[in-house]
Length: 492
Image (cartoon, rainbow, N blue to C red):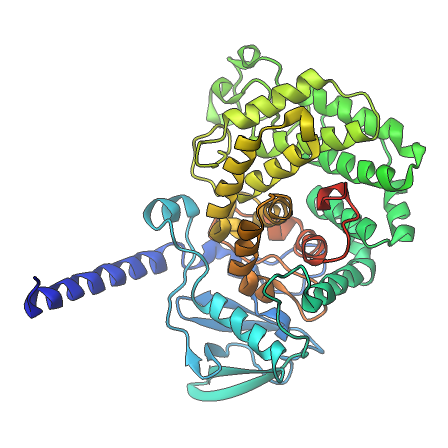
């Protein structure tokens, strides 16, 4: 039986460990590697001074400290205009100070040392306060330090209700937000879509297609109904094939079939047929990278260039292959099977899918979600119930890290959420949505769009490739509770 002295000593040790963990977390990349002050060069957020934290539908953005936000931008005609001021320090919401520290840091370090750390802290507290305000009187009360003085600032938000316990299903708020997102894409956001990276362009087209905005969809089809050039990247071919295939399956417009056929052939060309053929391959200053080319996989480039094969591009190609097959075009099933084999060989028994193989510390939510989508589309041709359950469990474990993925965190959010809707486990899907509910509130802008939020991966360039469109389109697809329109949404 412990004595009062040993109990007190244990408490002190625990306190020191928690403080050490907090200091370690706060000390990792606390300046966001300069991205707080690195603006975007194109798109709707060019006026914003850097890759900042969006403070939900308030219309303001800020840098994030361990236990506070510092306001750095306020949109005109937003709820925060004339309420907040630049350099206001927000220390709490609804009369409660932010108590749980949050900080950025490269996720490889973070996941090894602190594997259970999510976005708890000011971001979650602020997002939950938005939820409460929108579900009651619409008043979001902020504790602010302005020029050394502590004041209260009340931001008026629209009273749109709370998310239901089963959201997005049977949830008026989810449907309202999904329709707002679609309205943004078909309205003020549409002029930017053509210049988006393939992630943002492809997902925007799919969201507009699912919403029945056919005039705009046909404009996109006309501009994207072109056969791929030599040396094009797998990303563009994959999204182009997915979008045109979903369009054909809804409209039976045969004009796109030759392009879909050419795109699938280009993806087949991008596949490594035998890793032995690339054992002497080098890549710039990286030296010999031949060991990174795995049979059945795809890399960045359709000419099998670069530093090796990746599970994310391979799985994107599988989604494209399976949709193209449903359109009736010719797809080499042997190559499809080879790609599925590569994907499954890169999956651990816990459901983790590595970046290149089954090893590695990159956040896996996007790869797991995309794998679920690919297997769902394949149906009986790749009927692997045990594997499906395995990856679903892995996606569940990744719920805290969806925005923290390598290169493009919003790519991970997109496919992680789409995969959760098709995982055949309602409890898992709901838990993923519930945990990220506050994050959704934080990412939502005052004009109905969604914007990328900084994650803990310091190589994340998602904001600079598609600050709003990829995530806005994702939420339009993921939050709607209408009958599924696209195969990616689960339409039979």
